Image (tube, rainbow, N blue to C red):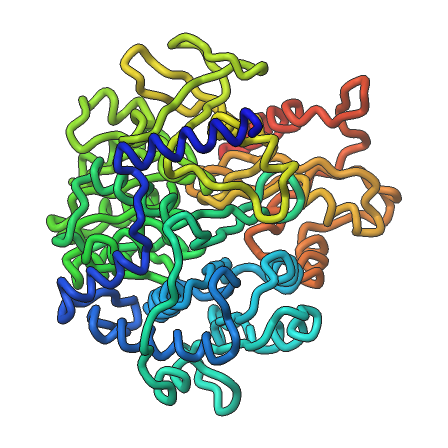
Length: 544
């Protein structure tokens, strides 16, 4: 047996001995929630769709029978491209009952991204919104269906728009009978695959077993005292690790209540918080920024809210301080799709740690700061953040080489993020090794944007960097060298090209800088740090 396999077996034994991993699956946790709280509301959304645990159990039974009927076997993929609607939880529970791997997909993804994900997963069924934000998903799905040999069925979920023909979730729930028995699966089986964009051009499938997800949410609950009395308000997408893990999974694991918001508006969010007496919430910096601005203008009763967790990107310290003044307790949480969460600021941590750190490791997680050779560094020295624990992902779907780059034989996941750890074990994220832009908590590959820009006939070279933004943290700025300067280039023209390429709007460049040449190293690599400093200087001069 190789040293790598021996190491993995040793870690597996340790996690089981310590109680991080066991034999229970997420389906077992779901069943216990239904048995313990059948009449309690399990999930509701902004539109008022509401299911008790018993009602949701019955609806998911019927969807599970449909999945079995179309031939979905344990371990096969069911993809779900839905906003934060209560119906997502119905489909999630159905997947657990048949042993299928759920694959949540961001609603903003368009044809190219959807084709890549469905093909990589070899998805058997796709659930999708009939319409959301005035986008017609039906036409997109119809154009792709013939290109994906594995796809057996597509199912529309009606919300904003009703459809007279075709397969719909409502029709399935109405016509199918309840499930007789659930499929047998193990806690170490694959349960979910979430896609994330990193330094490579295409989204990567992050694989989680039942034990990975259960360990993650048990640690989350321990740190924040999350239990059956809590009401979790989730404005972050359910296809993100934040929304999927903490907005949907954690609530049913602990028989709590999940409140989903599909389109974020701060006043609507605060009204929803008051309507449902929400006790906790979580989202990226822009959510906190907008809520804070709204609270300064108008008074809302947020007394039920115990805390608002902020993750996805380092939160500016001034926002944490300003939130205290309006009665909003903001706590920093740090992690990634591959390992959520790593660290968190505790409910009762000293105020200086709340203001100036991204927390300490959550229970069961080891953190270390390493140099370029991946050797541990002492406190106070900046290096790459690495984590190890029962929540760490199993690898990237069908990408062993990429997996090997970030996940070693000892179980350490190397995040690509830079940080400093203090003498008390608290870390502060200081930057990134990876060339990504974090726009409102969304990781966007600059390489992917550059590759699309270079398809525009008049662009000879392109370098994409993050430009600072008070609300979103970062926006996309593209430096380009033109083949013919007389032909010119406009931002609107670039956006039109991206739209024709079916690229998600969150990936559109938001500023174009036309230059005669791009600064490069002797080996020909673009000096991104020069471009970043240039745009910072320009924004400063403009008063941004």
